[in-house]
Image (cartoon, rainbow, N blue to C red):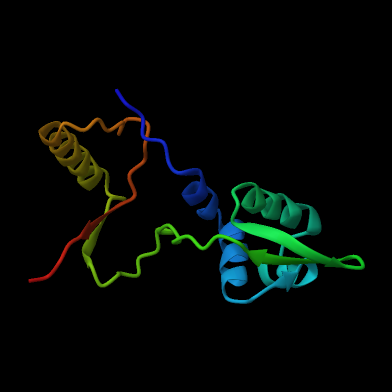
Length: 139
């Protein structure tokens, strides 16, 4: 059975602190480390941990230093992955909550059948299904 590996950039941006840092930097030309720390509300150690991760993926950089002040900016603009929020996009036809075990079992059965019909391999056994969002176009 094939495993699905997520894109490291998308996976990284799913973390709430990294996502908040990236979104803040997208909305401004630059921020200092102290400003970013105030925006996301984490200690300095955690802040640098998350900034280094974003920097290693080529998303942000420390582009200048002024004394002890470090300035950060975005160097690669990428689409933000869905954060699982229930706000519907204009292409969303609806979402099904899978917290009910019977609904989740039915969804697993349906997804296995769809995967089989399409020739795809899905590893549903190692996943907890939370919701199913239906995306489409309205005619």
